[in-house]
Image 1 (spheres, rainbow, N blue to C red):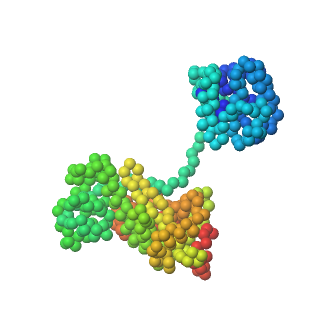
Image 2: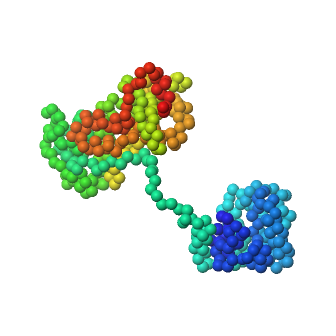
Image 3: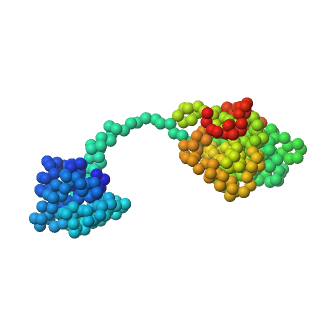
Amino acid sequence: MWLAARLAAAGYEVWSDVTKLIGGERFWRDVEAAIRGRCAKFIAVVSPAITKKRGFLKELSLADTVEGLGTLGDFIIPVRIASLPFADLPIELQGKNVIDAIGAWDQGLARLLKKLQGDNVPRRDDGAAAAVTQWAKDHFAFESRLRFENERVLSNWLSIPAPPPTLHVGRFTLTSDDVHALQEQFPCVQRHSRVLSFAPTMAFDLSGRYGLRAASEVATETFLAVGAGELFGLSYQDRANILTDLVHQAWILSARARGLACFHLANGRDCWYWSAARTDVSRVRFTDALGVSGQRALRGQSRALGAHWHLALEARPSIGRVNRFTLTPHVLFTTDGEALVGDSARMHRLRRRFCKNWWQGRWREVSRLLAPKLERVSRLIWSKVANISANIAESVWSEFCGEITPKLGGHSEQALSSGCR
């Protein structure tokens, strides 16, 4: 059927007992009439199965009779679409040049079209493609089978609402090293002698160390769209990167305050995980994509691997034309629940063994496990911007991880890591 459609799209009128007439307005009454009176070429598509069908053999015999009249030249053109020894071809095809399309239908079609063109087989140029489209609609009833409805799409993107309406700009007497101390208080970015933050400039504890020369503010949307007069020369991407950096710092401060450990990935990014020092955290409740509720461990011990495993989360923000977190789950290993496996090659081997049966569905489940309610987190980041290091610490990770429960009494660490209950 594919071959018939491609030939019709090339402008040839094609008939078969399955497709009837494609690309033409006439309808032939039966196979015999088609072969005897209308065919310029008989294309015999051969495979081990078709050569055993009585109907095909009868049609091929009739085509051989027509070819024997000697008026149509190479009337029969064999096309082989499956492995079939040439010795097993029907007798009518013995000695003929067989076009081989096994494993390369496009090349077989190209050779067939070249043969038809070389034999001057008539073809049409008046809307053959449109005729094929209409035939496909009529033959398969595509439109009657289509359903238009909304579907839920699982994504590792978390939409972030609009950032705080105001960006504060402070002009300080400081060096590039001084800004790190300010970043321990609130997320901020230094550009020359100016510090940009969503937190009001006066909220920083300067302790007499830094000289505040001036303070101003600009609407966040205005800054992103056109910039600020005192911060000239910044491209749109520069301005988007500044806002993204502020959100990223907020994420880091909240993770640290929540007591999570950081692992630096090979690509320079960070992911965060629960070490054994967090004895109050063991399992989290979650709801999967099908609405089924369950529990799963966030960390555990594998005696077979001789190591402790930890689920970790990388949350990469982006502010600009699309505001979002991109969430990526990871699995890390420690020797005792706290000290990371120092050898990167061993870490890689452990991950391959531990996650060898983790397919896409499992990784999606882990992402959903770690971040079931992140929509509310992004709002909390903005709503508590003046106290972001303290307030986000109490909200971000509880939201990212659902309802965290203490270790269940009477259960061993091994039992707790056995998965969904």
